[in-house]
Every structure is written in C-alpha cells, then in structure tokens.
Image (cartoon, rainbow, N blue to C red; front, side):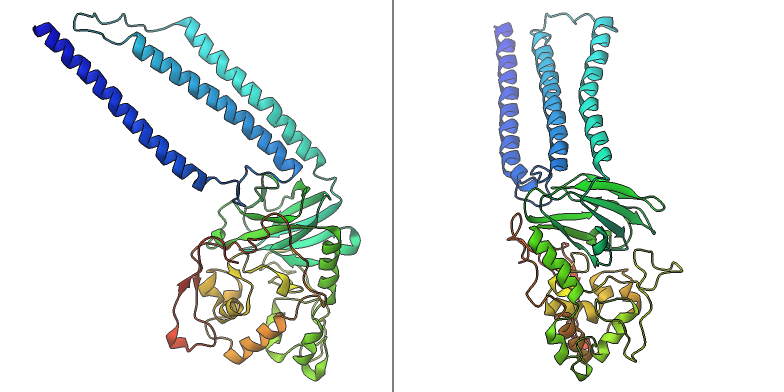
Length: 431
C-alpha cells in the first residue's frame, strides 16, 4: 500500500512537471509569435533580411549559412539533452546512483572536431565574400566621397570628373543599376557607414580611407545611419541613399548647378537671382550655394574648402552646401522633416533640436529675429530646380521621412520666447 502510494505521488509529480513545462512552452511560443514579427519585419527599411543589391545578397547568403548551422546545432544539442535526461533519469527509490564519468576521449575529440568543421563551413564563404567585395570596391562607375562629420554626412561626387563640383549632404542620390564606389573619410572621430538593405558596415577611420561598392538593383530610398558611437548626437546621424533612374539622377545634378530658381529674384536685392536677402548673409559664413559667389557687399566669397574637419587650418565652410536644400527629405541628418515649420524651429534654436552641433555655437536661441528667419526660410525654399525635385519612387517611397525618435522640438521662431515649449517628434514614420 505504502509503495503504491509513493509511486502514485511520484507519477503525479512527473505529470505536474510535464504539464507546467508544456504550459510555459506554449506561453513562450505565443509571446514569440506576437513579438518577433514586430521586432524584425521585412517591411522595415532598416532590416537586413530584404537585400536590394548584389552585395547585400551576398551578406544575406552568409546570414543564412550561419542561421541554418546554428539551428542544426541548437536542435542537436537539445535532442541530446532530452535523450540524456530521459535515458538516465532516476525511476525509483531503489535505483542506484549512475556511475560517474570523469572523461571520455571519444566524446572530447568529437565535440572538438564538429565545431571546427562548422567554423570552416562558415569561414570559407565568408572569406570569399570579403575578398570579392574588396576586389570590386574600386570598380564603380561612379565614385562618391563621403565625409563623416559631427553629426552629419558630407557628400562629393568625385567621378566622373564633370561631377566633381557637386557637394551635398545626407541625401545621396545614385543611379539605378550603376555601380557606385563610396570612399569613406573622417577627420574627427571614428564613424561607421551602414545601409542595411544595400551593404554591410564600413568604418570611417581618421587618417585612412575605407572603400565599399554598392549597386542598387531597383529604385527606392535606402536608410542608413552611423553605427559607431561618435559623440553627443550620434543617434541623430542618419542619411539616405536614394536610387533613381538615370534621367532623375541627371535632373538632380542639373538642379544642383542651377542654384536658386526664378522665385529667388523676388526675394533678392534688385531682383538679381544671383543675390540673396540680407538675412541670408549670416549663413554664408559656413555654407555655400551654387551660383552665389559674392557676399552682401559684392566681394568674392572665399573659396569653399569642404570635406575637412571643423577647426583644421584650411577649413572655410563648416556647414553643408545648401544647393538643392529644398529637395532634401529631412533636416539635420534625419532629425526633422524638411518643411517650413520645422525649418523655422531649426533656425530659431538648433542646439535645442540637435545638441552639440556646430551651428548651435553660432546661432543661439533668439539670435535670429522672426523676420530674419522668415527671409531665410523663404529663400531656402527656392533652392530647387525650376522643373521640380527628382522624383523618388520604388522601395520605401511611401515612407519619405523616417526621423530620429523622440527629438525635442523648440518653440517656433514666430512664438514669444517665454512661451517656449518642447514637443516630441512622432516616433516611426512621418509623411
């Protein structure tokens, strides 16, 4: 009687454990099924699981190798654990303790060889992809120099040579189906250039130029960011690679060279399109615009030296070139949408929007009056081609803006200073 009772209690205990384990497993499965699609979605432009270039396809191939090998190892280990637990469990009070084993050469050799084989299976294709990417990096149809700043990206189209005068920032236009070599520079700290849907990560190292090649297979906007912590506003250092058909890329280049459009004549002194409103003269201490070569007094502007770090001897233009700024999708390297309301916020108090940026050292809260801000905003909105901005189509076209999350926005310049408030920019997509 006693023995059957003890056996019954043991049976009930095992059933209870199995039941609780199955319940916990079912709950974890439901949570994972709900959570994983939200954490990793093929529709997210920052995902790596929807490659849109040959380089990204190669990287995705490596991910798949690692994933399936890791899954096989995980399942194999779990099966051995379950088999061992069931095979050698204690079945009754009379069972003796199993013989304790303190070494097994066969097992030790096996679990040394098997991981070595797995590592070789990962190593060989990885090295092949790395060497192939490095070998092809210099063979781009276009060459684009990218300079990591604190905290934005300066861009120069170095080749073909007829594009060498084109400088822009943060929105990098490239033609679809043409290979583009990115030469990555920095003269301040280490940055990291990352466009998940087009390529892997490449660091920008002071005193060294790293190179990578990208070919976008279809039109679209591909989101990038700095992946190496580089200072106060590192999280607000975003950019886009915008792949467009060749005719739209040519429109971008031609529009950049046009400078201000005919609407600028109504804002400029004596209706001269090559002049600018007086308030904008403040901006020319750090910025340049195509077609504007003189200051307000009519004296030639200093030659623009770009691509260098703030504080270096040769540096005369500390901010990005503003040609075509009306066509940029965002302000401040992906921190605000590029519209009049947020442009006023930026000009009113840049340090309140993006802490630590160089412009904030020059423009404090209230440095520019509402009237000056109105003049500058009106003029900047004319910096677009007469025929309109390049058309952005294809991948992510419905999500034109993806901003840094929870960015504090200061009161607009048109509001009284004592009424200043902060409000968060919406998290996620803002269109």
